[in-house]
Structures are given as structure tokens and as C-alpha cells.
Image 1 (cartoon, helix red, strand yellow):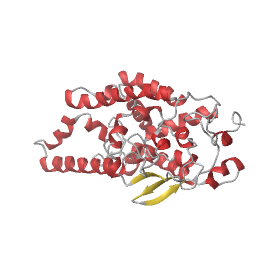
Image 2: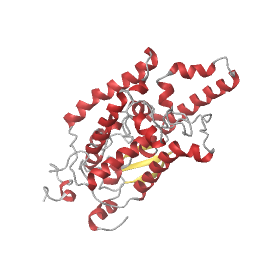
Image 3: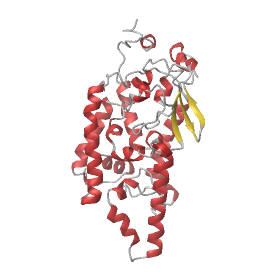
Image 4: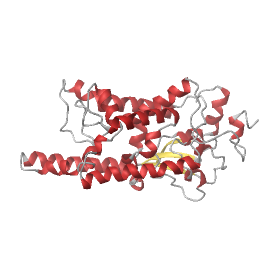
Length: 323
């Protein structure tokens, strides 16, 4: 039964046939439905809303840090990754030309960036990032074509971690040592294409193809190695959104680990702490959705529970009933 029935196998100590990121049951979830709506809204807002709202003029003076590439001229607001990898350009805002306007812009950008990093964190990755939407759509396409994903084992996950650190060092290195990170950024081509613009991709075009193919076979492939996501995750302690675990309700089935697109094992192995949010967690809610125990995992906002695991919800995946 373990080899043919995932619903039974996750209760087994051996969990035969279940691997990280491969547990997919068809179900209806209001929470995940809202997340998909937010992803589409985020892609539309950061890519097209500036053109529609302001009759073709980008609202570049709104200093809200989002995921809109500066090469997409219709973005609503400028993106933090550009200035964080081009610190001289940010400090140039405090120049002699229009000093009051530039200083106000620079201060507002820094304040809003810190607000998003500190208080929102990687919830932006799970709910608003256009690159995240593209990766999720590639994963849905793979499922629709009935192609098996690449199983991200513990060994493969350890192999990907040094690649993540290389991207982080390159991202920060360009900021302090000079150069243009945008020349190798794989997301530059996606964002400009969404906005209908042409741009020179340089080496980033090659990496874009790698990320696109990788996302087809590995869910949220880019998120595993994304430098911006990691930097936002560093402020997890102060985030308004938290991932909680009731260790007394956990039966150690491992479903949360198998469902996690970021391959985070500590959520499954934790036996004492309540706060299990990690620097890599993008708060997508997949672990909560696949957890078979009441209240074992939950997501909170300002201390209030907004989503929690439920045995009834879990079993409805196999009975055909909706939540």
C-alpha cells in the first residue's frame, strides 16, 4: 500500500515513494487560492499598472521596494535589488542636482526598503514576486504534461547551497567592488519581456534559460539560490508573518518536509521551538496545507493565526470533498 497510496505512505515511518517536493494531491484551498491571486496581482501591478494608471508615464518617484526591474520602463516603483547592487547610484540621489528632491527620494527608498525587509520579509517571495509566479506556472505546466520532477534529495539540496552563496557574493560584490549585476541577472529578461521591452541580456540571458528549464523540473528552483530572497530572510525575527509549530501535535510524518519547495528540513525535525521560520522559508503555506495533524503547523500575522493545518482538510484531498 505504501508504494501505491501516498495518503497511506506519509503515515509510515519509511514513507516509501515520497520524496521532497513530490507530494501533489489535487485539492481546493482558500489560502492557496488567495496566494495565486496575489501572485497574479503582483505581476500585473509591478509590470503594467504604472502605464495604465498614469497614461503611459511610469510612477518612478514612488519609492516602494518591489520586484519591478528598472529595465521595464512601465514599472510602478523602482526595485531594491538594483540599488542594493548599485550603491553608488543610490548615493547619487543625494547629489547636487535638485538636492531636496533627491534626498527625500533616497530617504524614502531606504525607509520603505527596510520596512519591507524587516516587517514583511519573504512573504513577498511567496505572494507577490513575478518571478515566483513564473516558476509556479512552469511547475503547473510540468504537471499538466505528466512529466516527473527532479527529486531534490538531501544531497542535491546540499549541492545547491554553494551555488546560492556564489550568487549572494556576486550580488554584494558588484555593490562594493563595481560592475553591473544586471548583466548576469537571470530575471532581467523575464521582467522586460513581460513589460514588452527589448534589452541586452548578456550572460543573464543564458542564466535565464537555465532558470526557466530548472523551474520546469524543480519547483521554485530560482528561489533556492536567489540572493535577494536570502537577504530578506535575514530579518525573519522581526517579520509580522510567522510560521509556528505545535511540537506536541506533530507525529513526525515528514509531510511538511516533502511538500516544501525550499527543501527546509528543520521544520520537520524541530521538537522544541514554536517558531520554525527559517531564513529560506518564503511563507508559501505548502507545509501547512500538506500537514495531516490539527494545529501542528500554522501561519500567524501579528500573533493572530490566519492559516493552520487540519486533519479534516488533509483527508478531504482523498475523499473528493472541498474544504
